Image (cartoon, rainbow, N blue to C red):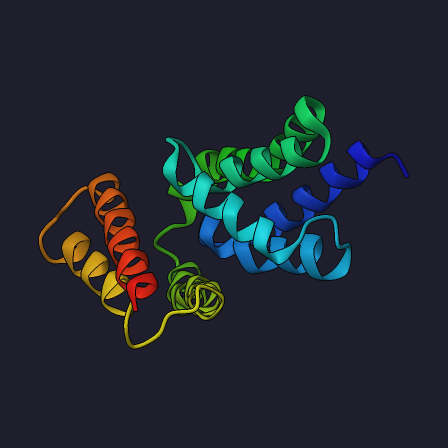
Length: 179
C-alpha cells in the first residue's frame, strides 16, 4: 500500500477512536509509529512532541504535520494532518446537527461522565512515560514541578515557562559539568 494512503488511514483510525483531544492521541501515535512500524525513533517522537507543543494550533494536527514532514516532507505532512482532522470534523459536524436533541437524555449524560476519567488516564499515561525518558532525577525534578506550579497556580504563560525551563536546564547542565 502507498505510504501516503497508509499514513492517512493510520491517522484517520487514531482520530476516529480517540476521545479527549490531541494529548489523548499520543500513546496511540507512539504505539503505531514508534513501536509497531518503527517509522521514527522514540527520541525523535519526543522531540517532535516538544516542537508540536511550542507552536500555535491544535496539538494533534501539529504532531501529525511534524511527523509527516520528517518522514515525507510536504505530502507526508499533508496526508497525516488530513487523516487527523477528518474524523474530528465529521464527528463535530454530526454532533452539531443532532446534539441539541439528545444532550439531556440520561444515557448521553452517563456516557460523557464515563468518558471523562478515561480521557484523564489517556493524558496521564504518556506524561509519565515522557517523564521517565526525560531522565528526571533528584537534581532536576524541580524543573517540571516548578513549571507546573507556575502554569496552574500563578497563571504563567506556557511560553514563559518553556523559556524559564530551558534556562533552568542550562543552569543545571552548567552546574553538572563543573563537578
